[in-house]
Image 1 (cartoon, rainbow, N blue to C red):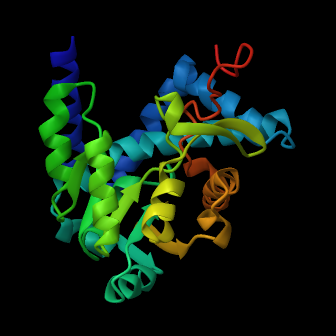
Image 2: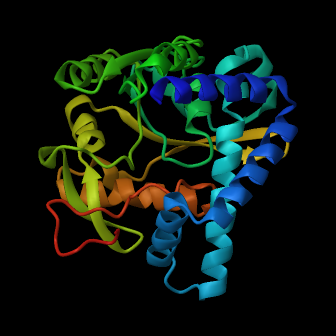
Length: 294
């Protein structure tokens, strides 16, 4: 079964890469519409997350946002052929970039830059563009489908990024890169698997398990914290870099973690339908009560 899944993914990537970007996205939205009508797990999680994150919206508005979010996820999946398989020179003209001078100035001054890229828009685009600004080290966990590993590695490293493992050795590589004045990339809203790697901190007003790695890296290295999001636009992507607020550098871990989640909230407010709401973000560890998900 896994071999069939791998073949299907590779075929879909090549088909989407061969289509015009607008056509690939339209196809993705169409398939997402079919998935919505089937009422799968992703739809249920999306609806649950949006009801938690936007309690002031009425039920109809929540449902519309959930449906648009599922459609945006369909676009995300359908455009990955363009992002992963096409040469960088094909993708670069589709980017409208704002704020990259923050990263370039820090590099020129010899200061490391920790770039936080939430699950908003297309975060794969962020990683590819970052490696054009300077040396980049990013954590990488191999996919469950091992046969896709080489495809994903090649795609993510095609502009020069270095992928490091999600273990102590990989974290050490991030520390060394930042202390050397280089760039490190993290997904700040990814729920850690280990209890020691996170704390429960509010996100969208709901306590949830939040990784401590970003806060600890900033404390250990003195790096500049930058938030980056590549939002989907009709012609391609609008890639925005902005400096995080001062609280993220706080020596009080809870204050820093609250700032990390606040930066994610600020980013998703620009286009909430492009946030990955089908991800079970509102998990609490250790479990307290029945939890938010079935």
